[in-house]
Length: 111
Length: 115
Image (tube, rainbow over all chains, first blue to last red; front, side, top):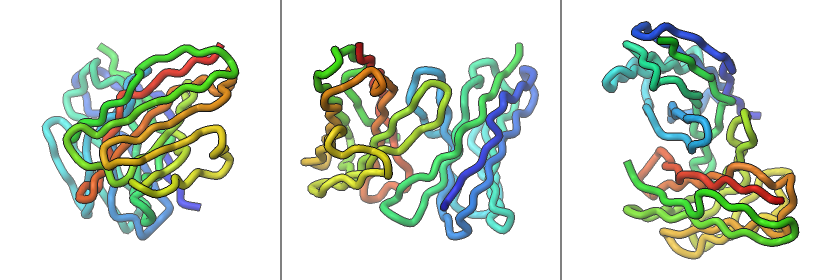
C-alpha cells in the first residue's frame, strides 16, 4: 500500500528561525510532490510543488526532493506566527492523478 | 492558482434528511474531482474520485448509496449526503484538477453538522 509519512508534531519554532518539515513516501515511482498548508477549520491551500530532485525556492519557502531516499522536505525561512498551521505532504500516485496524503505536521511559531 | 468554489460553507441539518454540497471550478475545466472528509484533528480522507461524465470511484468503506456524487459537467460536481446521521457530521472538502494541471485545487470546504 502506498504511504506518505509525516511526523504529526507539534513542531515548535521561534519566530524568525527556520522551520523544517519532512515527509517520506513509499512509492518509488512517484513523480509529483506537493506541500499544502491548512489552517484550522479551513481547506488546504497549495504552498509548493516539486517534480525533480533538488531544491525549489519560492519566497520564504524551499522544497527539497530526494527521490533516491524517498523524502521531500519543506523549509520555511524567517518563520512568522502566521505560518502556524498544519502542513500536509501529498504525493501523486499513478492512477487518475489521485494524491496520497500524509497525516500532516502541526507547526507552531512562537513569537 | 485556479479557483474552486464550494457551497455551502456551513450547513446544519436534521437527522434523516439529505444535504447537497456543490463544487464548481470557476476558471478551468475540472476533468477530475475529488471529495474528501476530514474529522477534527485528523488528516484528509479521500471518499471518492469522479471524472466528468463517468460514475464516481469510491474508496473502500465509503457507501456509494449514502454519498451520491454527480459530475455531470466539467465545472460542477455535487456530493449529496443522504439520510444524514450525527456521525456524518464532518468537514467535507472538494478538490478539482484540470486536464493540464498536475496539482489539485481545493474548495473552501463545507462544515456539516447533523443534529
